[in-house]
Length: 541
Ligand code: ACM
Image (cartoon, rainbow, N blue to C red; front, side):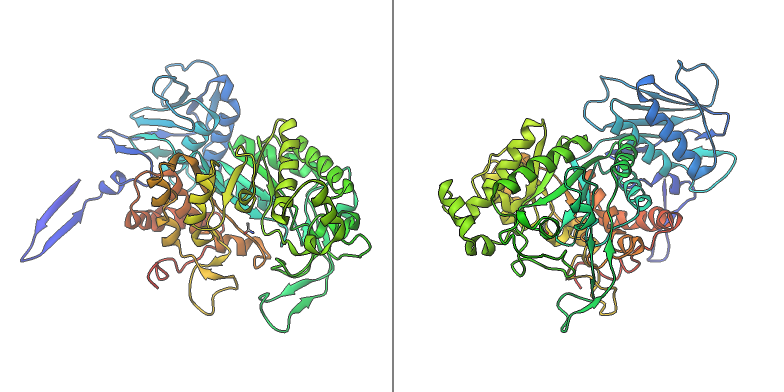
């Protein structure tokens, strides 16, 4: 409620106390948020959380999250709700819940009713509930009287993490997944292999771990610095299969799908360091890369020989067996043609298969793996370069280039996940402060992340908007050696991205208000080293 006081030539907007409750506190902003004229629902440890048996896991998750935040451990009951008040009821309803991930919350007087039909609906409702509750411990807490209806704008909302350039503990990977769940993302893209290391435990090719997971040194400073300096210390590691299973299970409770990436046929330096026979120069002793920005500079491609193809079949089978996700990411980016051009055996292979160019060979690799995955009942996703050849359009494309590229890929018939370098690469600077912590060149301030149009006008005009199923931000970790630096680079940009992808209605000033009032205190309670200059470094600077 607003009262207007007209002073002497002065129009003053006065906020009365109750108004704070009336403004939406939730990020990403829900589709509808209605503050009801009723008392809120006071909960305490005797309050019962009723749930349908099929969503026991999500009810447990909700109980645990509420306890973690408020200290109040609700009672759980799978039975039908008794008359005991106050109560929270989780329920399903085919009529009012009309889309995936949708939920409805109504809270007033003595009960909260949460309606959803799928895991993500209840997980999303949990995040909203957490933001309705005070972010502090107490014996009782009040959920304000509200009616909320909410569902996402895009079906794919992802965050990527490169654990190759730097590897992070399982505990941080889980924390990162918690960040995703809180922001109502539904996909974690786990970049597990690259030139600088191999990061998951493999049964069939043990040298991928004993050799490929370790580099003998790591670049210090920016990769353009001259002369290059190195820390001469063994660096690396990998996630065991049990750790990976643990992370998958953790994500599943939170409704997060993990898409693992095994990047081929380029970005394979760690692979050929372990198994030189898969390279175009089998007699060479390759090292695992210790520098960044390998593209076109050093040989890192797989050779098209029987050993390589056998390897690809085996390794993608292992990956597909480990990860339950429908999609497997097969990379396909920045594949230098140089090494294939120079190699007589590769040229002979191309001739034997009628492949007119190295580009066609790249497509051959990608199609080879995509077909194999199809036999394993999986689908493929790859970086946009794979769409340059003549690829089957069932493969999902991640466009890391610009709007023109998105249009070209959509015109070829592919579905697209938008992850444009500008502004969705969170390894780029978020300020122009010369003293800012080291990052990749380029300026991607939070405002650009918030305002980027995921479906470009040109794609809309071509009638191809439906080809864009969503977007994600990529977090390449060359200059992020520790979790604290990852947090610094992703917050508040991840929060801005979540609203860009989730909410139909965007309002940057209102986002900034919620960021300041609601999210910054959250970052602090997560002990997160977020970037603080987000108001200074805007689109115009
Ligand atoms: C990429 O940034 N090479 C996908």
